[in-house]
Amino acid sequence: MLTLRGYAHLSPVKIEDRRNRRCGVDQATGTHEPGARETQNGRLAARLDSLTGLRWFAAFAVFGFHLYHSPVRTTDTAFETGLRILFGPGSVGVPFFFVLSGLVLTWSARPGDGPVAFWRRRAARIVPNHVVTWIAVLVVLAVAGRPPAPGPALSGLFLTQAWIPIEAYHFGGNAPAWSLSCEVAFYAAFPVLLPLLRRVPGDRLWVLAAALVGGTWLVPLLSLPMSSVVGLWFVWVFPGTQVLQFALGTTLALMIREGRWRGPGVLVSSALLLAAYLTQPFVWEQWQRVAWMTGPLALLIAAVASADAVGRPSWLKSPVLILLGEVSFAFYLVHQPVIRFGAHLLVGERSPLPTLIMAAVAMLGVSIVLAWLLYRLVERPLERRLRGRARTAPAVSAPPPA
Image 1 (cartoon, one colour):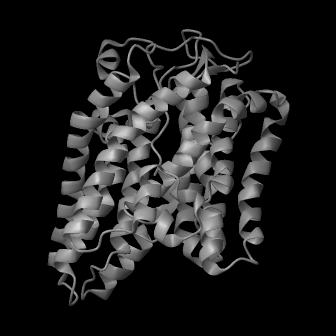
Image 2 (cartoon, helix red, strand yellow):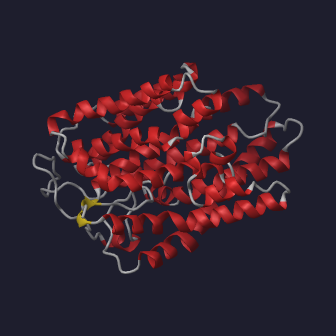
Image 3 (tube, helix red, strand yellow):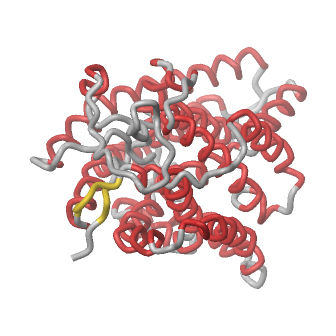
């Protein structure tokens, strides 16, 4: 039977139980590969809390992206331009989560853990939030007189929509859930993928990482003979191509654990990512969302993770950012329905700038409140119940799909 060295939660990089975090309980296995860099007490850090804080910024970028592409517009053209610069490339949050998911699941892998236990924990992590938001969106659409067709609705419920190259399916219902469909595919493959990547010699992990990044540049070229709709699906949605980012995250985790990561630090990586973010609109459309951003995203994620692994301090570990990071999975699932409802109330003539700003702040605030309620009343209690008597989870967990 296949076994893994461990798995993580689905929710990005958070401690399994916040009580354990407050008490300073170290839930890690303590095992790591020879040659791995260590903290002062001789062990790699089990917690990658900075990634929890970092994931909030990715979720916020996705929020801004959907806000920018909503029907709400203002009479102030300068503000519209600023909004486009700030949030036009905000979809970058999705590949961020895919890379982060692969890294954290690999980092927190448990010795002797089997696929069935792993899949049960993943289901316990994502199913409650997904089902609740799926029902809520379906009800709202029905009340609004725009219920989705049965096919897209059912494919969304069972998270198979990302495999269907029809926009009404993969973006139907609660549109952001398409990335959950990809994550389910990643989790299905992880018990096979991780042992395969562990066989790669340590000194060749750099080659593998470069090949995976190169693959993201090749995928758009393969889409050239396809129609525009199918090409977008193949480049942006299809789990068979998005798995490159997940495998890249897994490779980065192996490199960091073995002490072979030699990339730039957090500041340089942040600067490179910012440069890529701001120049993304000038790149060929099929390279924009994935290929152009994957390399810089991987550099920043690896830099932050490696700094956490050796115990360096970080402002990303602040209590506010940790809390926002913990609710970011729920925030990701609820934010677009909130934006769509707000846009429905404001649709019509262009709104004055103060009205638009107040509406945007209200949408953000409502999304955060709903996310916190979903996290406290659904996500955490149902996860504990569905996990049953499973062993205590590791100290870090994978990010939610975005």
